[in-house]
Image (cartoon, rainbow, N blue to C red; front, side, top):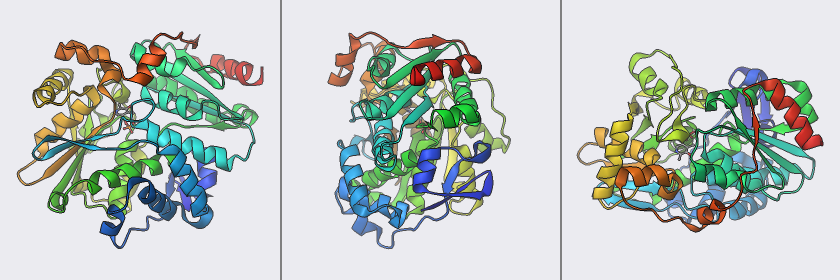
Length: 428
Ligand SMILES: *Cc1c(COP(=O)(O)O)cnc(C)c1O
């Protein structure tokens, strides 16, 4: 697999290098040179999820990695499914929350952890990542107990739910968590500064596991295939997919699926009030505002770091801009959508509700709509219970950690403080 840096196309790497480096020169994102589309998409769609995912990933990664190795990685990573739940006659929820941390990031996180443990061949690595909620949990669980890999996770203090926080801050061992007195964008900026700092990057063998890592994106392509495979031939004719978006990794993966040949008519980029992209799609002006806190906090991002990849796909003519529209859903409509879904017999959480609301705004007669159910409702129990006025029971993974202590360090929003902390934690 050949990838190039979107900020400097002389910076070329293969898959293993892109996974290890995360970001390229000038903090540029790596992007595949080629997307070899499937000639017979129906044959691929007819396969079961795991063998199909092996096919998709070996096609993307190419002969750089033996298929048997990819098979082992996929079998260890994808140990749960992605069922489509019918919500109305022509609307489905793609449930991506049946993994160990109950959110879609388990797919990318687990795939990446398995890839890294194979390609690192025992050399020490430090994973440094920022989370607005779910990446942290997925990454922490995916890497917990893997030899020679230390994980450091930054998150905005007081801006994620207590249960969400417990899910990744209570593991200990090789998982180190830090709450930062600032918002998610500031955490993300501190991570970027660390990667820019040669002393830290090389001294600690840094690797980022957030949605900028190409391995995570590739893993996510697989469940878009799984979604379409569960539709009838008739339903596949005009599919609209609504993606609740923060950093836009999920939407990028969906677009890669379309380029590989999936029958998807349109995408909706659904956001909460942090609406940089929907405004950009309407006005052509890129004008991020300060991030605001919302119920769908994993999408509280005003400078989405995967957006350049989507721009690149449009610029290269892989994706026609007209198949993408943006919808921003405010807090009032998010809650309304949760109530509407509950009336339809489907209990959902704020992120999926934003996507459902956006889909309902745009879906027309004869189309089949899919919104991505990115998290289990119990993961956002407080807000779901507040909005719906009914109790939500905790599934096992959440119940288990709810009683444990938070092991995080606390730091101010200051890069030098983080640097000191990193060396102390990893080098002792
Ligand atoms: C991370 C996350 C999102 C946003 O996904 P991106 O790939 O960053 O756009 C949406 N919903 C939930 C529950 C998430 O955890």
